[in-house]
Amino acid sequence: MNYNESILFKFFKAFENVNAIEMCACYHPKIQFNNPIFGSLTTNEVCDMWQMLMDSSVKNLKINFSEIQANEYIGTVQWIARYNFGKKNRKIIHKIQGQFTFKEGLIIKHTDNFDFWKWSMQAYGWTGYLLGWTGFFQKKIQQNAIQSLKSYSKTNY
Image (cartoon, rainbow, N blue to C red; front, side, top):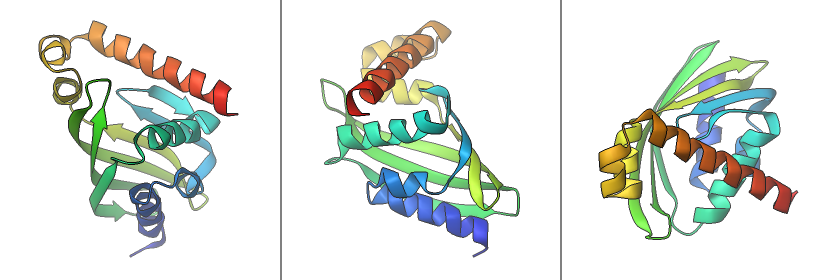
């Protein structure tokens, strides 16, 4: 295992152990994060997001990761998150492809890609099935996620 693969392993082990502080220790101070739910986040927003997600699902979050690959500049990880979501406590099995860029021995760019429509069907049932593929629905989910993150950050810091 090379150094960047060990950083990814450390990041996902911390994730598996529901430890956002250890996860964030793997990030460069100028981290850039992107995924379909939260969009683009930087620096403190990223760590706040992980802490918020862990605080809200600490009892039911299960992470599995595999296929860690990295060279001097980039890396990838396949990972699956299992958790319950929303007021209806819907069971989610979330398959994700993580892409990473490294700088100075840390992760400076983290992009998670997944099928938003498949996620929305699990998270929102029939509404997700009917609307999850639309830009309107995706934008609404992203706006709600960002608002939740802002509220969490204000309350907890």
